[in-house]
Amino acid sequence: MKRRDPGAGEPSGCLLLHKRPGITSFEALNEVKRAFATSKVGHTGTLDKFASGLLLVLVGRAVKLASWFSGTDKQYEGTVCFGMETDTLDPEGVPVAEGPVPSWEDLEAVLPQFRGDILQAPPEYSAVHVQGQRASQLARQGKSVALRPRPVSVYALELRGYEIASRGYAYVQIRVHCSKGTYIRSLARDLARSVGSRGYLTALHRTKIAGFPVSQGIDPGADVDGASLRAALRRVDQGVLTALGIPHGTVGPEVARQMLQGKPLAGLIDAATWSPAPPGGPALPYAGVVDEVGNLVAIIQRNEENQRWSYGYVYARS
Image (cartoon, rainbow, N blue to C red; front, top):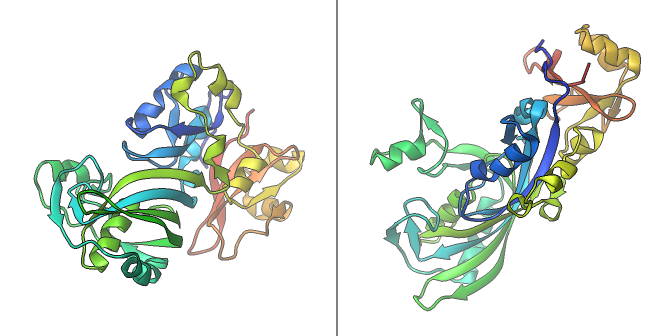
């Protein structure tokens, strides 16, 4: 069992940030670090520098929940330029290829093959690690990077607008609802190539992370003294788990106390009231446990081989 963090008195929880384009996701956290006077700050899913939209940020002890909170679905609105491809598949790259501009009808015809469970190769300029280095580092060194396709899920993909620009390229607005690990830059590349064209993503806006909309996000750059950020810090509770789609069980004080002591989970799980259903089925291989007032006690995880549950991280304060 992992030990609880000794810094139980420090600010801990999650924040919804609205990142503006032109800064990295890491840079967007600087104001949060200053507001809470801590370096224990992290996010649960990167947005590229040119992109904008929602970041789910964890503060204090909650940073250790990132691996479980990062597996959520996300929604985006973006613009794809058809007729040209850049090396980075975004507006910060240099042109590397051109192709004929597809019609709206051409694109509509290929959309079905990009919906559902698909295999997708990440961009060469990405944070995916290859032999201990980020693919983007190797690409900038001029080295060829061959990234294997990975399974991702695209729950919804639709065209929202189509415009031919003065240079003859087509700029197409898309809306995407997808799983963790989906690269919208790769989606733009593959859409274009599937109709015999080339394309890259010119703009991207993340509109939703699981049940959290971007309208709830705070612009950290507009918060001069950090007061708004501190006021917006959410405790990690039943509401957060529900919004993230993470199943959770509610336990009484005695069971919570036994969990804090590291007692075996088998009988303790049976004593919980589960929402939306008891764990163990085809749902996520992890779940939250909350106390009677909804505060997170622990994250538990299931071994896929023997189906036994173990403690992932005991979060409750002493």
